Image (cartoon, rainbow, N blue to C red):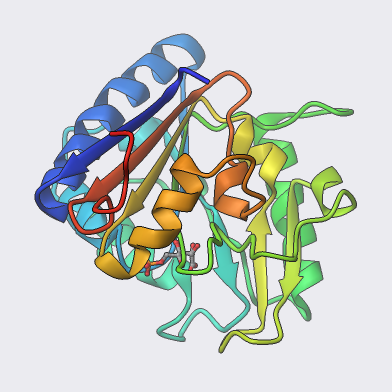
Length: 245
Ligand code: 6PG
């Protein structure tokens, strides 16, 4: 696949600046073509620098920007572990984005599967998808966990059944937060642009396996866009074990 780009940055700030530049271009193109820009944002700590920088950018077309989440932990909004809460606090509250343009995974439902169903319905009505047609995000931001998970697609949780859905609940035995909701691999792979942001030497091994491993079945390695662009944005320590770059 030739549409995969690996870029190594000195600092996470430089990485965030790169994403900001891309965000400007991708959002302008999407709005020109379709009148709106749809992005799905990652949870986790790595993108917080980017979200802070974006929050100060008043020039971006926030009124035509729609923000979704790639995943959510099934905890109340008030919890420090809630991705929507952390993205709201760092980014959404500070920009003039209309409330109707924000598409959280609501954890006020009775169960994680019910939250996933509600989120799936939100995607269907926003993207007006029917039949087998998948939503097409203009941009999806992702992270990688030390075990090779991405979004809340953890090793051992991928199944053909789940792949028929747009969003699904995931139950984990060994994680502190056991119930999560995530968009599925087919939705990720249908995006126009996918950007992994990864930092830290503790991720160097897994980054090498995801980028250079042959036919790895790790969830992050199964992110292979059908037609879009794929970026691995790394800091020097996360990229330290790569051989081919
Ligand atoms: C989440 C995620 C998850 C995350 C990785 C990396 O909600 O936890 O979306 O997939 O991106 O675990 O997290 P860090 O950026 O905190 O290392």
